[in-house]
Image (cartoon, rainbow, N blue to C red; front, side, top):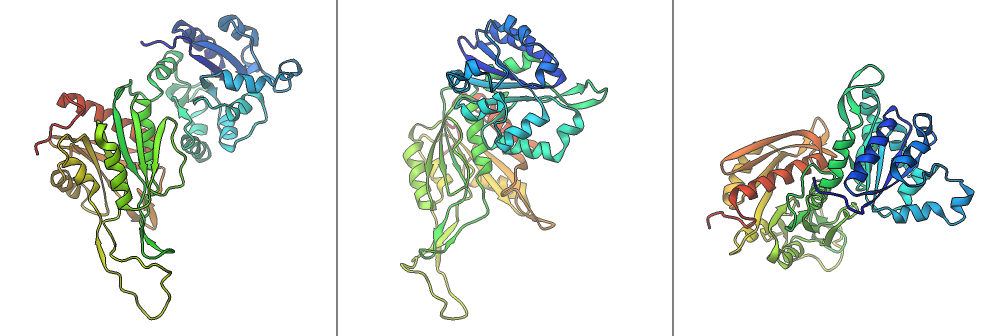
Length: 413
């Protein structure tokens, strides 16, 4: 295992029965070179003592936002700035809920708000609490804010039940920290990954435009997963209401033409191109200079095709490993396979979009299910959060690149 030499890790321990595992977790973190400071909640003190953590960490333990001596020098800000990484293990359902709500009513939650460091969470709770829709909504909300979850694991629980909710074992948590929290062991280290995400907007007049339902969530999740796998990531994004993932170079665009230019400005040294954006296929030939007024019963728009970004990339003399997305309302895999061949792709990700019993599928949701297809194989990824799917997809891309022996595509022209 690689080490965490001199990595400064702030360990938050909350009030779950798994708090006792924190002692072993501190010991293992120090074995791989990390410096560890511990912050306990009032609930954690009911399960394990501050003296135990101080003994194994070699550092003073903080457990009170109102510690007059420490706060005389704004100690909570000092701790927040000290940390290279914040790890909450175990994290109870209550703490996850407070973190999602942005509360700062104790030292640990305040630190999580005050730090610029990555925040990772190892949940620990009863299986029914973990499965509760409120908890799952909180987890999805935190994932959109770049909080990384490690676990939970499945197995025997302190309450006597069996199921998903156990805190991951200390060794697994340390391995996740070393690997970047993704399960992908720096598989794209040194690679440049270029990603497109979100919709494009094609102007009709200064007020109106042609667009689609894409939220950008899948592309942004893939950008996060690629960073976790060690890649340098450029994200060319259409208009979306999403925060830029940590470590990602984001280029904002509006139209298909702007996205085409931005992609070709960045593709020169890209090893991988992942086209998740829902690019408009057509645009008005002559957008109006002023708002079109209602003068009759109908308006005729003459449309022309927009540039085919994906095909233009695969046509390059030194094309990167190219991954397309096929969002279809019917015959999903058939159309995906046709697109794979027509656009000379290395891989395509097929998923169904549209409405199902009045509910939007694919676009705008936090979960998805996809099939990944390449020339001589495929892999079905069942329904999961888009971030989980993104990590799996990055792992598949890394495997396929290794199988071809080159980051650059070996497709025939």
